[in-house]
Image 1 (cartoon, rainbow, N blue to C red):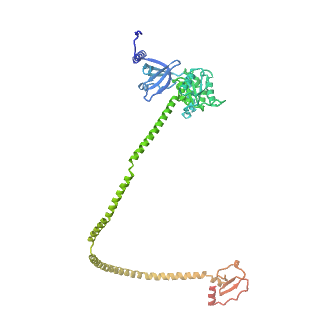
Image 2 (cartoon, helix red, strand yellow):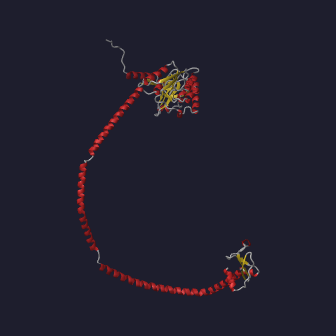
Image 3 (cartoon, rainbow, N blue to C red):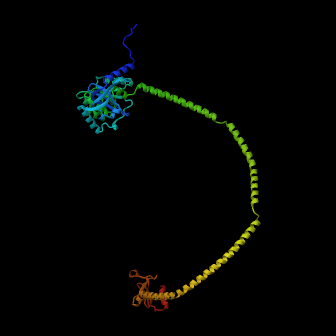
Length: 491
């Protein structure tokens, strides 16, 4: 039988509370110098980050009230002096510093060089989100760039074997020291040149290394490594250092894993979970099909119950038809009776034709009397208007007679002048001076170009006309007289 120990027993909460009181009382006011890492500003306004140096990392938090009063804007890579107190977080067995004030202490040469390089590469677009490639769901071949002797490759292989065994190609490289950056870059570029000599091309690359100081991880901050990662046609996961460590390859890679083990988890799903998911989906599909068939069978049964008996439907229709036929036989006599009653009522309202004729005769006599008076008045008015018009015409005629006499005399003078002018323009005067007018058989004037032998022409002189034939002797002129003039006008 075990003897009871005299060492007092504590519950987890009691021990955590005792540690919290000890830490808070012992380190109620401390000043810590370190580099800010993993800085994050929460949506609540609180600041979460870590203070680290070459040997240790201290988690820190700055509550929203104190964050608004800080004299500087914290960011990753800054070397600061933080003032505050230490406390513990029993829920995770962690301790952290509650920062109340912060001041800039300086920035190391490596961190300044790292920040300058990061800005330069970012300006070239190597870190753009649009360049990121999707990670395959289940890669057939995974290429790993890491040291062959470290614990990293064993952790990755072990994790892949637990989750979903895949074919792994290892490209051994040095992960620290001289020449490490060039080896890592050549490994990434080499995997992108596969397949070679029967070796398949990987579907996914993992560049991995364990944690360390900034100097230890510096190979993954070199430009040659960052550019190789950005130019890789194969999707690449960077798993360099611990979760608090950040290198430039993390920005250029398609996906960043906090640890190498996490990179293996991101690379492949869990096979057992996939099998369970497929089995569950299969079972759900079979169950859904069975339920669907059962629901349709029940629905058909319900529909069949809702359908009426065809014989009963026919009987109801036959009864309705007989009722309509009987009502139709009675409807016609009833309709005629109603129409006769309506006709009798309308005939009682009609007046006798003699009464209508007497009323119309009286109305006609009244209208004829009114029309006679209206015609008499109209005739009198028209006579008066005619008398006024006749008087006005007589007055106008008296004024118009002298004007007409003058107008006629003027028109006669103009006519005589026009006749004299027309006579002066007449071609007869030209004939009196010894000229002649030559016409063809149609009475049209001719020219020398129209002279054709045998053509019948007519020549008019001042004292008569004569007919000639072109190319023959001239005919004797005829004596001038009334008949000749008439004949010439007819030609």
